[in-house]
Image 1: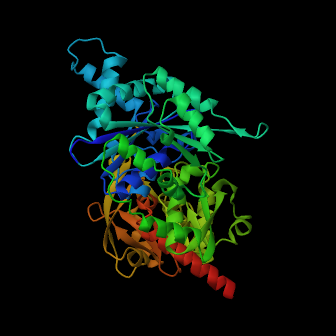
Image 2 (image 1 turned 45 degrees about the vertical axis):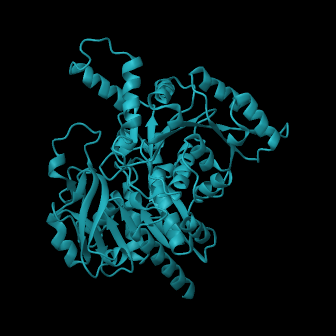
Image 3 (image 1 turned 45 degrees about the horizontal axis):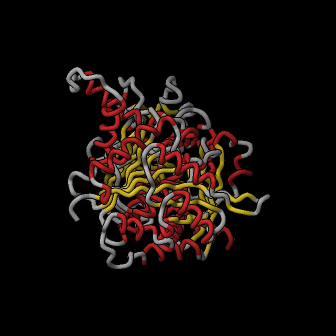
Length: 541
């Protein structure tokens, strides 16, 4: 198509309106029309990346193929578009300032005074346009984090204003996502918050081309006319975004509102065929019409904030639809589990997933959950720390190493069955220094993991510092815990399975990060299938 086109998505009135889902949905619609699309997220916080942020602060930290620790919205982009993102798809204020200060220290500005305009805004624009320089994409969607009017967002909005003239107004469209609240006492929708939000944007020199209005109630023609008049946008560019049953409905709702058509008209992209969404609709059909259901316990330390395990929750949706099964997640705090109450908390479950995490808090509860799943033949899936807990539990209760632990949690343990990798031992900085990104793994034939993947060589994404300690491998394998996934280069153990168990798998990597609507992750599909069989067998008995 030649020159890349740019779509900017801003938000107003309140946070958490769903800019990421709107961006991903628009991307899906444009992709379904044959355009090459990618999405990037610009976050206004000063952290270099979310790698050191508490999950309660920011939700999960999403890891890309190239090892970038990024915002969880990149997970939505990948799940909707079914294409990988990278370091270039997530940029923070911290990264922008870090780049500018590094250049200043190197003398690249030739003694000039470094200022927000033009130096910071130029660096932001350089990152805006970086993905469009090599011709890989027709349309690049940029989501600006935060809300218009926030102090920290101002440089991004100013850079967006300048960008229109750098590439030409016919190559940029601005979408402003806002809220049209319903006042129950008055019995009507109110447009004033949207008007004020657009006014704030105009004060920064940016006129939105399209309004997307979140609301609990449909926007009538009168409301749309009012918004069009006061916000200076065409009537047909006032788009309603009603609350949806599932985020996967949003592309179809936006198609009904013709959001993709409005964007393409503004960008002068010819409207040819209708978007091809047959596979998406098939997925939604399976998702909304399950023939069975299972309950799976997600045992973790951050369960109060479900976004801390966002990719796992979405992977269950994909795998459930693949199995025509509704997966009910029971969120269980690992701190609430002990030897006395474990049966009462877990006995009704059809499967147990022990979630990833860091630190000692809640660890014993995870270990207890792993033991309960092992001894009661309940399908078990351990991810990252979840796998390590399964190894520790097996070492204590099957190998008889009663003080077995992880070096992370008990440096004085005589039996560190999970230990720090050699290349991690001298690292002092915490951010971006773990084993991150995609690594290869070879599977052993005849294993359940091999059966799930259907191939021997796989790659998966990692985010951890500690590993299975090979010193204990022979003893564990002799008692039935098999290492069936090995990194061919480092020989590190990536997957363990219990030979005598119907479905008990622990993985050192994060399979949830590669699950998409088009390609549900095979281990999640296999786990849900095992939970269905467990549920059926229990009912029959």
